[in-house]
Image 1 (spheres, rainbow, N blue to C red):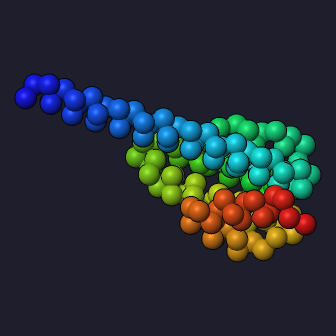
Image 2 (image 1 turned 45 degrees about the horizontal axis):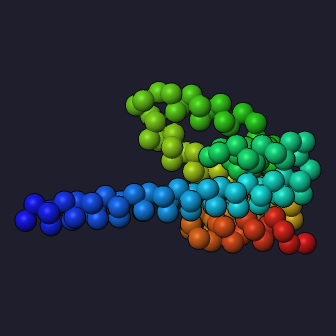
Length: 136
């Protein structure tokens, strides 16, 4: 009985560790893909520093906001994020602003702006970012 319990616990731990490793590898692959895509978009938009797309988590957002030329908006978000009471509302506002920045970014590289709305659906965003980055 005790031997079976140890096997079950060991198998469960191995399954959890395998899932963690899988998701870490998947996250790195997605980060590399989006970084390459947003770096190509930044080059198309003629930004001075396309390499900022490689900053984890915020690189694509920085590229989109620099292309949109709406430089005062991030300061409002920063103020909202540090005030705990309105942090949730600021998070929602961040999604809305990132969508607006993407809309303007797509327009700047001569792609339809409404793609930004479709980018809210997770698998579609990878497709549209890739098309925007590597198509003519």
